[in-house]
Amino acid sequence: MLQRRLAGCLVFLSIPLFAQSDRGTITGTVADPAGAVVAAAPIEAKNVQTGNVYQGGTSATGNYVFQVPTGSYELTVTVPGFKKYVRQNIAVPVEQTIRIDVVLDVGSNAESVTVTESAPLLKTESGELSHNIEGSTLNNLPVLGTGSAAVGSTGIRSIWSVMNVIPGSYWTPDSAVRVNGTVSNMGSLRVEGQDSTNVYSRSTTSSNQPSVEAVQEFAIQTSNYAAEFGQAGAGLFNLTMKSGSNQFHGSAYDYFVNEDLNAGVPFTNSGNGHLLRPRARRNDYGFTVGGPVWIPKVYNGHDKTFFFFSWEQFRQTTVTNNTPVTVPTLLMRQGNFSQILTGRTLGTDGLGRTLKENTIYDPSTARLVNGVTYTDPYPGNAVPAQQFDPVSLKLQAMVPLPQNSGLINNYLPVYANTRVSAIPSIKIDHSINARLKLSGYWADTTTSATGNAAFAYPLGSAGSTSLRSQTTRINVDYTITPTLLLHWGGGLVDLYNHPTQRTYDPVAGLGFTGTYASPPLMPNFTGLSGSQGGTERRHRNRRTCRG
Image (cartoon, rainbow, N blue to C red):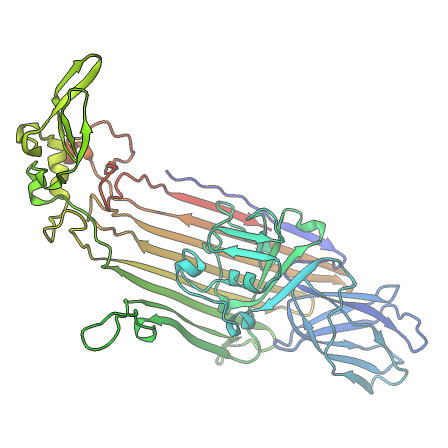
């Protein structure tokens, strides 16, 4: 079954520089030495990494507000009759407000007053409780694990590991996200300022996650956030993705697991004087590169156009070779179950006959005695061949032969399952001029996994899983006046879940009728160890467009 949902959202907002959830805020007042406010004072905020300049000005009350992407900024105020004011080292986190009050000194514009101290983060403009964690912090702390058990279905290091360092938070991979004791999975995830929550399954946090290496900052608002985020019942999670700068930067990495680095199993011997080390192999590797868009003799994007590309992949192959299963012995396949008689007695029945443990009774001898149905045991605990069911014979032929003479755990299957996940992403920033700026982001999270089991097809699971999530973001900002900003944002989240199951016709293959699966699948026979047959799989697709 294929299900599709498509929703379109385009938002035009012409607002007096109010909060946008993908950005930070620089605000304050401009005054003269006597404390009188200075109206219509030209102000510029320059991004130190990219050279992008954001122009603004003070209102009639001397106040100014800048909504800018997260990063490091330099603030400049130039007013005739006063010395030029320059404030450096302004670190602007996402969803946070930096207050910089400016006091001008009388003098010539040719002179300047430069303040180099770092700006303090004051939370006087809002009352929300929030935490801002940089991507580098996650890399430096031992909180990033790999493998599906540690981070979820993709196996790739998860940005949700940040929950381990946030007070009052709780996270179980692909199961629960809880903040301050609230109901699980009621939060909202935003990427580049737009909703990116998995609307199909809020608990499946890893299906549409970006790469940790592509994240500039992860902001978590846990309480008292603004009314515009009212759809988030328990926590607002906001991701700002990395942008390129005027200098080229890159990285390469590989987080891997290998049994040679593990401790051996105590009291074991590999045969060569060492302890046994169960095979464990997985890799999480990738690279990043970012900088100005530069094409020799064609285009120079310094101070104007920037890119940041990230690619990460997770690979893991799990070989199962230590879980024995039970299959019928050679005598059992002939109907002879004399081997399972233990010799123990369990009392007598209503006819005074001794009840022997594991006795098999012949249903064709059923008779009613004093209102009770009785049957007789098969002689020698052996079922005659003429009573074999043709469906069971065909099914038995699919079960592998035992590898030893044991009655239980007599077959040791060896099978491998592979999981491969990848997250390529790219972000482009372009400044047309000081008033008009564009930004675009695209990411593609994919996971494929095999589903091999103890028994081969059609008894064992022959299905595989394919998950894919594409995230697209476009943001446009145009400064209409120094105190009026036009912001447009559009985005698409495409979630695609495509588990597959090989079809099997039980009528043609087994002569078994009465199944209802569509398409037809191997029926699920209870009691067959290692059998995963009969599971119905569905195609699922969700598309949401956010603005």
